[in-house]
Image (cartoon, rainbow, N blue to C red; front, side):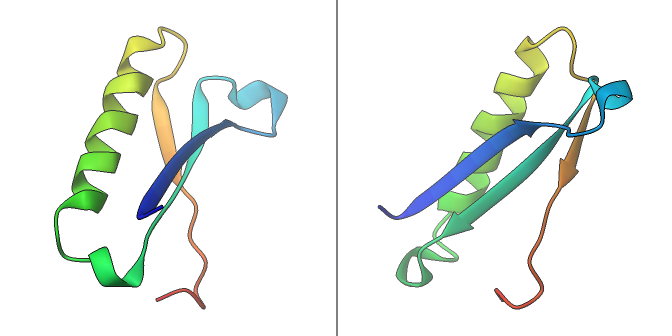
Length: 64
């Protein structure tokens, strides 16, 4: 696997219009456009969901 992206329902019930985005790209594939493509597909998927209005990026500060 060279990368992944996931969109998860927001854990707070009153924020059903939002989702959490997490993603990662294998170190050897970074700066190759894979991350941008994963992000583009995730955004298109989210746009197709009539309930979603907002994507929150979830990051881990030790994973840079």
